[in-house]
Image (cartoon, rainbow, N blue to C red):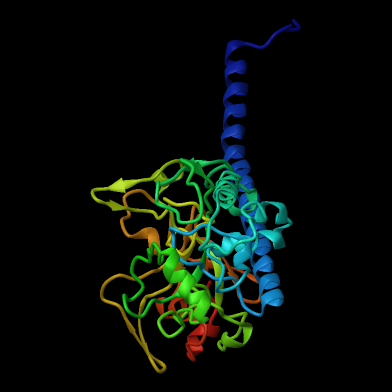
Length: 351
């Protein structure tokens, strides 16, 4: 006799098979989506590095780290060491965002701020751009910002952030520890400009971008394809949406707008030890090795890293993109952050 319906057992078997197939398919779908996000993140790094190279071509030096986190960008500051804001601000015209770059314009230098300049700076800090955000980490929107006393801008409570940081290599006085500098006051900056005696910090910083930096391609003697320029930065996941505090110490490095001057929000270190000539001695203390984002890791505000599994993206001084393994050799990582290490390790593969 011909049956007109499934039995209950047959239906349950079909449902079980469909469930198994869905269970096998979901990880593949998630992996494909993450692969697409990694590719998009790499595209962001590519665009940022090419914009920085265009700045180098126009001003004969890579963009500077700015004056410090109490200084916002100003178009009258130019692109190089006289620019008060960070490299993120200096490259805006090269990202087809010249209108945003010109918002604080008032015809006066950064140390003589007007109401127009301060209001324009607030507008810039309140305008997020997708190119500064890793799609695996957080959406392109405004985030909570620490209220510091900006000299040349009105600080909004919610402002833009960036998931990428430039490389200052090591800071020789503090062995690559937390880099956080408010910057000098307006009178000091005015003196620097009038006497044309800007601080020369290249003897303390071994990387490419730092306070008042004016690094040229010729200064990158290890080779532009062997030296880090900008990459993904480590952030404590609790910092994705808001500032994160652990005791009295902020961790994760995400408290200021990325358009403000040099701070660990926009520049990171590769310090892992001491390089004496060609002899490298591994540090017994803090090492700025890259890490995947994770909760509870205090001290991550001065190292590179990302939300991606296995590796993070790094753009080199020639604009090429490399994947940096979290298990990278410390000596290789240390030397690739330096513009002129003179070590063979600078030419080694990072993954």
